[in-house]
Image 1 (cartoon, rainbow, N blue to C red):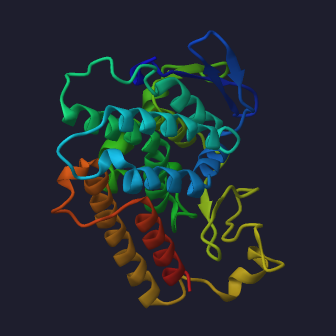
Image 2: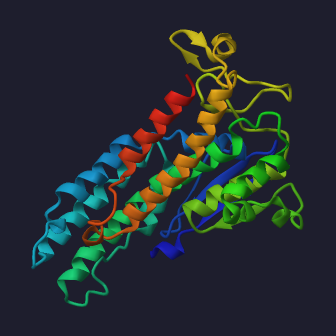
Length: 313
């Protein structure tokens, strides 16, 4: 099955929850536990891809197919294919949707359009690795959307949150505009999506359409959570070193000083630039990266985490 044939069915259940149905090319189906859009989006930002990401990076850095040489070996290409096909199983438990995406999207025959050139093997191998990276890329974008939309917006309405997203990512905000769903009556709705990104954008659309739940950011640990009531809630229930954030947070409010607000503004601006640098480097073919500043997933995530730690002190 080609990547364009990938499809997910999302079906509405009770209490604002939606279930994802995985429809495989062999005719089998798997229905995942239902969750609200807010809960599933938060869970998606917290998936730990560390080992999976390192496996991909090792192939980029160490596999002989990508060594600089005149001739590219067909046997090296097939060896890469074998290693690539073993990686998606790492996601089976932690991210079944992405596991399904990779299972259905990786070409079953990798040399169908072989033109006989050495560059074909090189670019075909790079394309397969880019497919493997899609779950990580979607999560990175989703985390950036969260950073730009929900940070310091606990007092805001859903419309104000969407407008904040529009100022940074206008195309994404338009794709997430709940007005697109106005003609579809709530209750028993079903949607078909054709990519991992489409799934997250649909969930964001469904999230902005309702106001029963809101995504907030804990002002102590900076993790995202769903407040249990409509009352202003600045801290979550996560436990760090035996203490809940809500018990410790009031002593460490990161918005207490003007300098911290200014630092957060600078951090947002730098995050946008770093993300663009990351995309340019990741989208470039190995032979085209010489003139670019290196920025892989590990480096980008490390920068984001360090920025978070500095700003929340």
